[in-house]
Image (cartoon, rainbow, N blue to C red; front, side):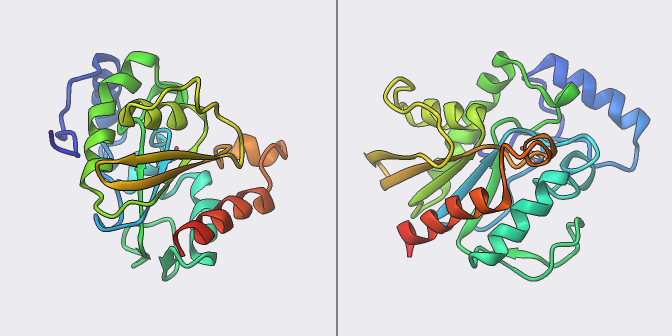
Length: 214
Ligand code: URA
């Protein structure tokens, strides 16, 4: 199984139709499944939800140009997981260090809301991404959907690992070695504007990850 869907992936008819209409409405946008960003030997994988229409779907790099990217990339830089300046542009020269970013759903969904079948259809790409990320020690799931999709991708039981902000789930050993799943509320505009997620809360998650992987 490949870790990247084809540009014209048709696994999700609703998302493929949305992509076609976006290619007409926004011909200069990327308008395709957004590939993972960062080295395949990363020890940390950050899993988001799905590209934003005028962010990652426009630029072709996860969280790039999305409001959520401002806090994510600033926090990754603070904890040494990114180097360079984030300028909401894939040509900004920013590099990830020991870190990779992917999305549970690779295509932009209408209203930022993928449906269950779309999350399931895209999971094989998440599973393949996890499998190919040799030396993976920690995953940060941004939000409940990412959390549940990661658990399913690894064959772990949801009842044994309920989603909770700042939780650390020991996923024991799997074929790649020991792996911990850290949960965070998604760093979306809604969550940060309402105070559900503060920058301090978000930083505390990455501080715990840094402690975990050294
Ligand atoms: N942009 C992404 O790429 N993923 C998200 O989860 C949100 C914004």
